[in-house]
Picture 1 (tube, rainbow, N blue to C red):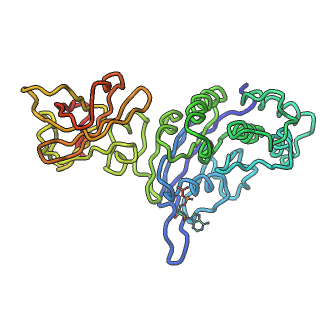
Picture 2 (picture 1 turned 90 degrees about the horizontal axis):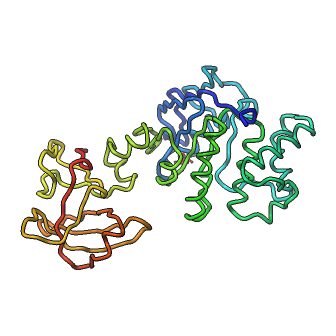
Picture 3 (picture 1 turned 60 degrees about the vertical axis):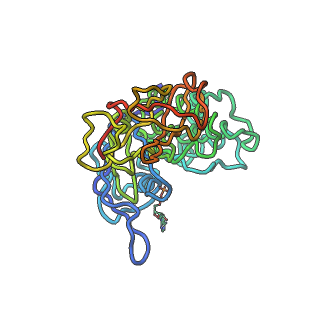
Length: 341
Ligand code: ADP
């Protein structure tokens, strides 16, 4: 399968892009390395510069300063279609007047690949994305998930060294996304393609990434392995963006002995909070405000009686069955999930 595509080391060095008058930076001094064959997820809120970063890598936007290299070669002056980089854009951008096969071979035509090679390649990539023999189907007859597979096949057809995906599953519903993320991760691993995957959805990012990059306002605010970024967010922004709402006063009594209180605020990960039937030994008591089931885990919001601070606990749903809104519970916070911020 590796003849279909192969990776290359991608590097972005101190790239700045500004728009408007007075200029404001859509990207400010962004530096990023994506090793060959690995997947980097770029995670950040709308407007933080994710698409601009992809457009710079693809050669569609010229940076004001900085450079992009592939295997150490500066891409400045290399036209987008000659970069060996495939971009799968945000919206469903299939051509409605072409068949599935016509869409998938589009890039190959641009590259003047002979028709017989085109046919073989189209068959290969359609098989790869789980749509073998779909060449003659009409694009207008596809479901959202199928259309995304075709768009992916179209991106893979010219055997790019790097593929850039801009919110590829953004238009799909949650359950379909949950199914497609592991499929995509498996496919990327099989192809050893270098991939940059832009999303504002943390579950998607965690499901796909070897490296996670978090952006805010044009800057990379943290990068590292998903496990590290999850366990050790550097800032309140990153912690909140990853879904941790427990950023609390470091002097709260409920926090375990040994908590670093020097910064005044600490993050207490929701999966480190345990709720127990109330007993005389409890150091902290809270009232349950809400209970929300989310599959195997359940989010319970409690308010500490002492000071009324709200805490969000993520507990196995099996343990939540006996809990009731309004009930008093003992609260314990495990030190592994506590971090000065
Ligand atoms: P994201 O993909 O994270 O939503 P974008 O890269 O699309 O963010 O945009 C980053 C910032 O740059 C935004 O403030 C956006 O309005 C601005 N921007 C992007 N493209 C242009 C453009 N062509 N002209 C002017 N401003 C732009």
